[in-house]
Image 1 (tube, rainbow, N blue to C red):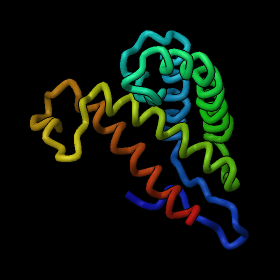
Image 2 (cartoon, rainbow, N blue to C red):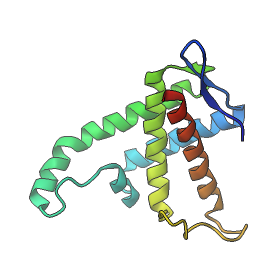
Image 3 (tube, rainbow, N blue to C red):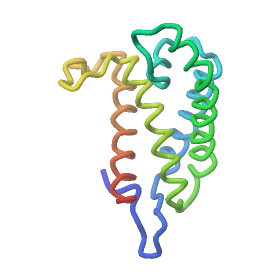
Image 4 (cartoon, rainbow, N blue to C red):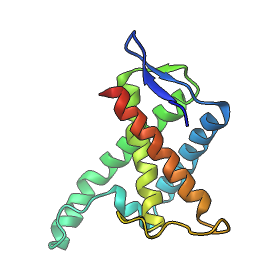
Length: 152
């Protein structure tokens, strides 16, 4: 797969995505927004890290203080990705928002798919119903890697 995101000589990050990939990103944003709004998906816990695993009261206080701020942060990153998915280029601030949004989706997908470092959960047959989800997971990782390289 060719470079989709790269730094230009003028300092911007060139977005060279075909229309179907741009549409995929927009649809992922919509799906992620719906999951965040619903709030009932257990995989969302991965987006809200535990600060006090051994103290339920302090953890509850922490969540009360930080959860809405984190939700706003997630929503802002998703909005930037959605607004700029059709752009020819993005600046560093937008690229960082893309990284955050792509990471949110990957964390959610990875949790749902029980992704591990050893990769043993990967589909081994073409008819595995999780195949499309793993393909999306890998594609988002591919974009993240290119953004990190472009920002370096």
